[in-house]
Each structure stands twice: as structure tokens, then as C-alpha cells.
Image (cartoon, helix red, strand yellow):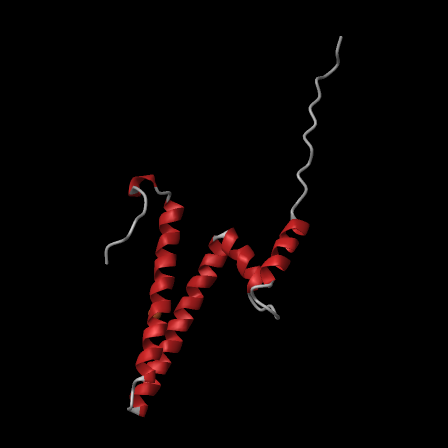
Length: 120
Ligand SMILES: [Fe+2]
């Protein structure tokens, strides 16, 4: 499969290229989850249906491993996953709480103090 780049390849950082591989792989795993579930829904043979659902769960595991890799490699993913995963209540409302937490947690930037030394 040809890679899809949205900027000249030679201008991409090695880190961006590595993350692209993870992101594309995650997209493919999620697509496979969807396909297996649809095929299982449409399958009259119970033994084959069980295999398709088993395979779907394997794809969920693959997707989850990639998501964990992204969490470890990308601070933006980490912060967002920390804000949303394993929370309770209204997910859409969670954005306001997450923004408030980010504002509260923002480290204070120390004031730079310049001195000019003794003036004679
Ligand atoms: Fe997979």
C-alpha cells in the first residue's frame, strides 16, 4: 500500500513519519474491527460467526496496543486520553472539565529577571 503524504516527504520529520505509521495502522485495525463485526452480523453459520467475532476482538487488541504506543509517544494524545478515558458522566460535557483542569494544571512560567550588574 502506498503511503499517503500531505506534505513533501523530504520535509517531514522522522518523528512525524513514525507517528504516521502508527496512526495509519490504528486506522486499519479499527476498519478491520468494523468489517469483522458487519460480517459476523451477516453470517448464518454459527461456527464461522464465532471465528469472525474472535478475529474482531483480536483487531481491537491490535488497535489498543497502537493507541497505547501513541499515548506513550505523543504528549497531546496522552493528555487527551488522560482527560477522557475511564471517566464517568456526559462525555461531551467532559471537554469543559478537561479544559478547566488544563488551566488549573498549567505550570506557572517563572518571571525572567534580568540584572544589569553593578552600575558605576
Ligand atoms: Fe490486526
